[in-house]
Image 1 (cartoon, helix red, strand yellow):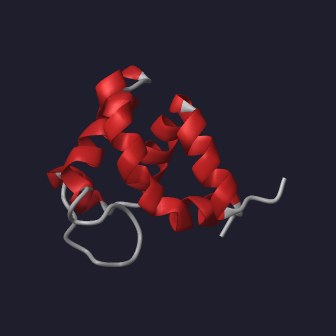
Image 2 (cartoon, one colour):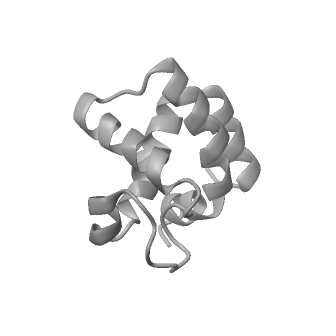
Length: 95
């Protein structure tokens, strides 16, 4: 399947597990220092933005530990993760 921005957004809108995995995937792009503090300190065009780093890092850590997000976490993550479509597309396309 050829992934497009529209297809990624549609998947994120309809599939909770895709949201959880997307948050975890973008978290993997954070530097180790950023993961340790739950913030963005290197502005390298990957990982979470400064505005989202704290909350989405905590969600990624929760997902890593428990394998899911709560309904409230999922709703917040779904809204925020959509701005990371470029990084998600790079990942699914193998870039």
